Image (cartoon, rainbow, N blue to C red; front, side, top):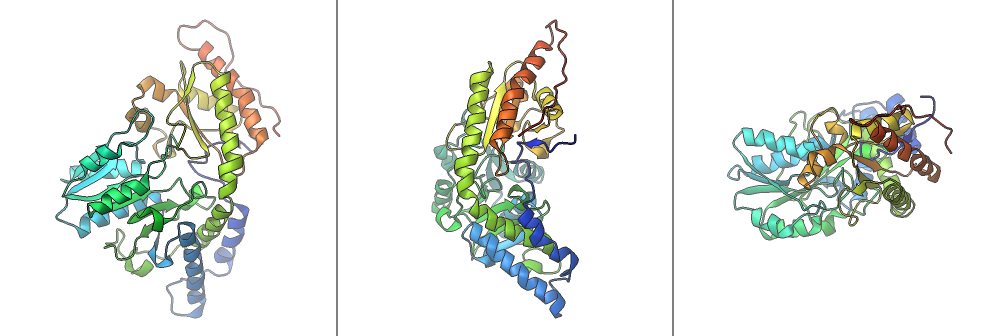
Length: 399
């Protein structure tokens, strides 16, 4: 495909911003010293890393000393839960939700196999969380509650400030996976009150392979990766200097584009969603309309499977997804939609569109123009329907 695709899968990953690439290049070509070295060639790099640390701290209104750089959101999630269990060996219970990212779900499954008790809190049919049930599910032996800020598939927001307050009232640790939030939601750890928070840079126009874990000051922490004592002894391994620099620049840009995400991008999402729901029969939204991420819509298409929709969208140069990229290849329907009470058939016929700051009106027009024909083709070729319709979708120039 020669044309740049219409990319509507920004919850999976984002295009690296040109400004981020520009900031990174010198640390790949000129300033490549080891930041842990004693000589100035390495020490100078270390100073730039501390500047980047201050930038990502500002994104969530944290103290730079509370930032631990990791490789990704998955490592950050695992690290927070692991630390809570290691520093409180008498506590053997973890509470999370049934709609978390697989980083939590599968780590919870691992813990259960090793004798820990894990509660996967159910959600309502619109994807929302029952705070009363959450409070009732916390126990004296609960080491940590881990509840995501925003769901990566439905976009539904959880009331993490209230969850943090409940955990604080019971004197137990609270972690939130906030990977989908930066640049879309204002994040202030001082106001929200969590003990741990995870971010991943590739969700905000920086490279894959760098993330962070916020560790609130005076919170006991045991490193997940043990090595040379980097990150103030909280995460071993030579610092990934170019990517940390890129993360810092991306954090600056995320703060600057917060208004655009919540106005222009939200309007594009709403137009796409409304046109699909009104223009294609047998469609409905998965999850609450609000509160929701400003860029995300998840649509169920009756009588077709997402696999076919995505294949024909791809032929038309449109990128979307049927759920988390981290579970692509699985034959199982989305665990998020099943937890919301969807049937397996509905879950398998659902597609997530997640927009970003680089999307345009013309791209939304293009999707709205081609999607009805794609759904019509698939429905016409469904088992039991006699038709000679072709599954090929013609490409046209895009604005």
